[in-house]
Length: 228
Image (spheres, rainbow, N blue to C red):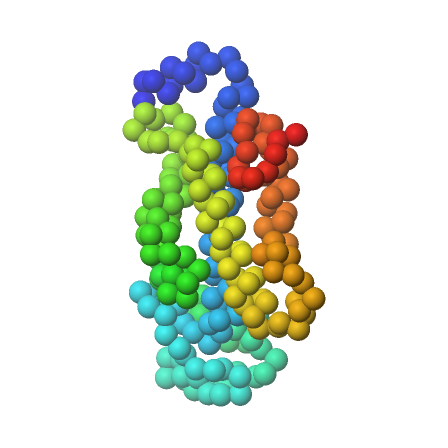
């Protein structure tokens, strides 16, 4: 702990501390965006009607106009209520809302599902479940200790770039394999290169954020871009 505290007290460059804090916040931002993108894809597009509970993902039935047994109570979910509509679920079927939301922290199972679908390689999945996730938890729960303790590694530019590349790969995979594949007519006029450049609005906005903070960081996060 002595070295980091000594540097903190002796360093007269406030921008250095701002850069360190920014790198940590960017890592957390990108990791959470990656996690939410993966979660939304599995829940809203691919796994409506699935229960993410405990250590497994299993079907609980196609709920539209079908009966569902919850704690021995059989109900029929009206067509105007979807699993993705959390407010209506909580209001009309609190037990169902609790069941469906149960297990949201189980990110490892979701990562494994994305590996199985081909969004990530086995190696990438392992990194996400271990090194990348552990770093995210440290930033989220131990940020102060990371800044003052010699026992904890700080987030580096390389860490931020790595998680960015993982998120960018996921975003591109979802666009090409599901957005384009399920509605080919909407994209039939686009060339291969144009399709390869496709991205979500979220990724586009994140690129703008990263480009705007490059001067503070002192280097590029997104490879292939040029600093002004």
